Image 1 (spheres, rainbow, N blue to C red):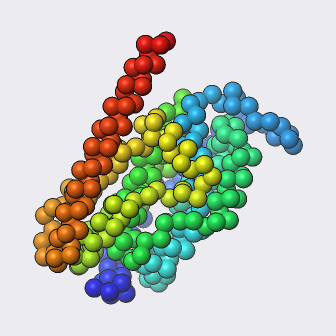
Image 2: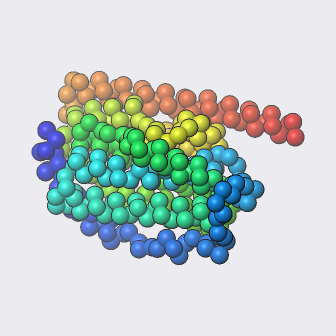
Image 3: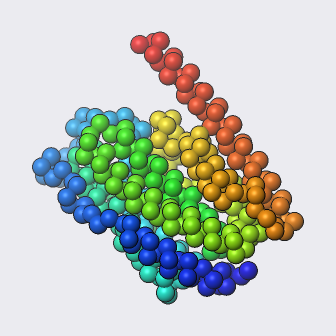
Length: 305
């Protein structure tokens, strides 16, 4: 099935999913969550003092990546708008999704500004650098896009939620939980749209799963020092291979989409299914090795103390 036919065939499903989303989405206001009374004026040239908001460096890295990822929204909108459709339910969804994602960057930025949790000069330079490159994942087809955003929205929800849990600040936790709640609704929309696409064209869906699962990368690769931030985030257990396997690949690809049980596949898709299942197994083993190394490092630290 070609891309335009798939998008057209999915239009009634998207209309239903959009109606469900609008029913489930809760209205909220960023200004009501931000602790404004904790803020003060910034003096020009005033150096940032991390002691004003003590927290592990990995949590700061997660907050920076979370916000700069949200800041890149114009390029995500462009990709989604052109990959699916700017008309009908598809277009309405893209605009609604964009409006909701915009709230996320507003509330996280205001929270970081008021609490001085990160160096705002470095943060702004990072935003300018990232948005000047416009680097975002660009799936090659609507089917690839549905698979990718399903995984990505769930990964983002998990990252936001786990970051909030490590903040020793109730307000910060509540902000990240609210953002994570929105991301989960976005994930469910795309997951169910992808499920409908799987029924329409199982072979192409499985081929897309192989491409997107085996080549998966979180948005944010254009962020300065992204690799350093990602390593710190993984070491802190905010988002790592184990989480990627246990909370994304296994429950979504293997269970919800039932990759092993998909019927009516072409010979090429059968091969892709086998490769994808083997790859998911390797991700699981990589997570186990990483967790073991992290446990050993923590044991050594506890002994030295």
